[in-house]
Image 1 (cartoon, rainbow, N blue to C red):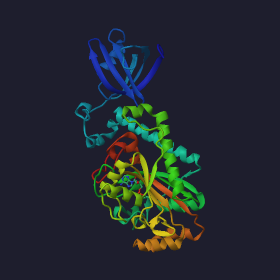
Image 2 (tube, rainbow, N blue to C red; image 1 turned 90 degrees about the vertical axis):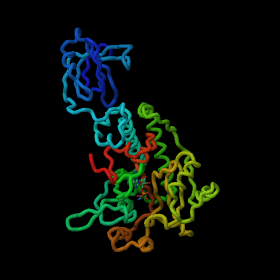
Image 3 (cartoon, rainbow, N blue to C red; image 1 turned 60 degrees about the vertical axis):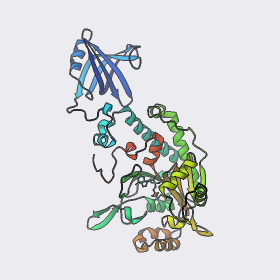
Image 4 (cartoon, protein in one colour; image 1 turned 90 degrees about the horizontal axis):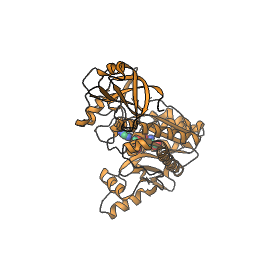
Length: 415
Ligand code: AMO
């Protein structure tokens, strides 16, 4: 473009005045550009730039010029400058003082102008696109289920109640029951949407509102959907390697282009591994954070823990035929981070009612759902993947808040 006349829009990243020259770095979502104005050569532009400050938003028309010494070997010689917006307050985020995540989230829109933060959300967008492309290619229909619902699916403690006209209702913890019903007609469905969990504690891995990728398919078992999930994750890695190399580099993340194979180990095997390393877990229990950390340190990369005790899983998960203490279920892990869980579902009403009762849930509260099982409900299986947790991994972040634009947790409801 050397010599071409262009118009660029962006915010001022930095400005330096040296006698009769102003050096300005203008940035937009895709990158930065040096603008150099000489008092003698470009008097009108020079005058307009004299008063600009960091984060002002400008439109500049000028000539592109090859310049070895400029940051990208190119600079813009401005002819005309329009200040479209000024930053009216003192900048609250000074990169030199390394503001903490809470301060940054208070000023999130400004924080996003940091190239590293931007890289996270470009990767997030690409990962989401890769997931959608993969599932569409496999013949899945994208659906949207209600988020105002009548009953819990994942256990009662973590529900947000709300007043729905004169009735009690809840924010959906999962699209679980809807995606299951939809397999009866739509066969292969997925939804990308919010799920709400009334978490009591602030941790680095939990939020009160999460984006979940929910997948459900008719006529398959947990084996099939584990393979699907494995291929989907591999597709995400490949897509990011192909299209987000710069963003990954900015974050200093090295992702394997193909993260397969992914080991599958049963719950019983996991207990065996833990026992051999001196950790005791009694059979039937969920695995503690410490146990998962130990296990995750022993198994590299992504892995599945399968065949969990039926009692540790929700009512809709199918017990293994011939061994009902175990279930056709899985958790999908990376290190000690649980990314997804899923399984084969119960597809008979009678069996579901029995499991609801065993879980001390009232089948009458689920009648609207159980009704669907009276009319040829196909066998089906699926999973729910926490998109935010996957993004922590893909962008190398320890804190889930880094990968969510406007996170919600027990202490944060704004912005
Ligand atoms: P589960 O409750 O395991 O399964 O949730 C699925 C995945 O969602 C993510 N997740 C969370 N991430 C951050 N903060 C939270 N508070 C939070 N809660 C859940 C995790 C988790 O693995 N209906 C089933 C899925 C299914 O069987 O299809 C379900 O909701 O990554």
